[in-house]
Amino acid sequence: MVRSYDIRWAFTWLFVIFVNVYCYKPVVIIHGLFDKPENLEYLASYISKKHSRTNVTVINLYDGLKSLSPLWEQIHEFGNSVSKIMKENPNGIHMIGYSQGGLIARGIISTLDNHNVNTFISLSSPQMGQYGDTDIIKVWFRDLIKKYAYKFFYTNEGQLISIGNFWNDPHHHDIFLNKSIFLPYLNNEINHKQNLNYKKNFMRLKKLILIGGPDDGVICPWQSSQFGFYTKNEDILPMEKQWVYKIDAFGLRTLSERNATKILTMAGIDHYQWHKNQTIFDNFILPYLD
Image (cartoon, rainbow, N blue to C red):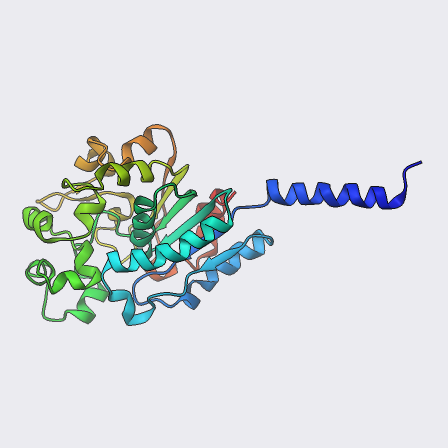
């Protein structure tokens, strides 16, 4: 005869096994320029409501004006926090980077050996750089238009500002390669000691989700959120025709060829609504947080 406590014991262990095997992976969210962690609570709450047992962390670092700090510095500090979460979750995590936070998240993925990021969702992030007179540029650099901004951003002082780290002037690409200390390195556009490691680490991703749209109003060109960018004539060159894609500089083509990359576009969404819009969450984010 089976005793009642034996049944309870069996069900308890079945539940433990189910939780460990079938629960959703933890999600780490990295905020954007001038944001505070609480600005991303909309997104965190959406995830928690749909996946009630999911551990969601919006990292509380470099908020407000501190988000203008150099990106390598931010990647180091955010990376320390993410590393702890990874160690606590050996089965893997998902990472969402919004706006500038998408570049920070990508930097963490590229520089952390043996990371266990399963899915990286880049939410309206200037992955191929920024070149345009957006509201943010106008507020902080009123006397600079895009034509002349490179003269400041491509200096030692300009590289102390996060925007300068991903400012990509298509008319001065040679100066960009020589003076920018961040994006050319992350893209493996120049030779450096970590070329192979950056590529190897990036290719560890199981899924890469690139979200953006034509009414963003901040990311310029908006196609940068999907690894497209301007030519020197300011025509748009899509991801598949970018030099870094063609030579598979950091693993982008590899992910695409193994069908690990999703490019998702929606019109009518401005930059400050991507992480708040319920439709975007339901259709572009939630399906990839398994």
